Image (cartoon, rainbow, N blue to C red; front, side, top):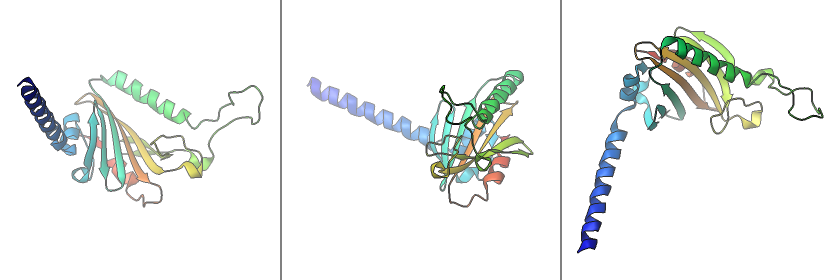
Length: 188
């Protein structure tokens, strides 16, 4: 008799967990972003893939959107955080001395073709850059390029959120909307 009740308990527990998970996934991508006080063009066409602790991933056809949200930051710490992140990002591409004592080369770094392009839009600055298979920036070789990407930081004073927006387009796919999508990313 106990085995029957245990089986029924686990079956009921499984049912409750599956209902909770399905409700969580049904929360649409645009509602999640609206909750954070942000939006962009084509928001209704994006499909939510993951939403965990302010890390959001969505797809838009073959394109991939990644957002990282930091909540409840006052203006000064938010701007310092953004400035520090931009410095870290730009340092990926700066020439550096090799980490070993005998110099085979004087310094390492990316060629001009692989350097990020900094652009200024109506809603702030952003970068156009290449990315690798795992969406990492700092790619300096043609055979490692998997995506053409944009990256932008945004501070929304109304919600006190800092958002890192990354938009990836597979290499070889037409990237006509890279600038438009990135520039459309804004606070509500």
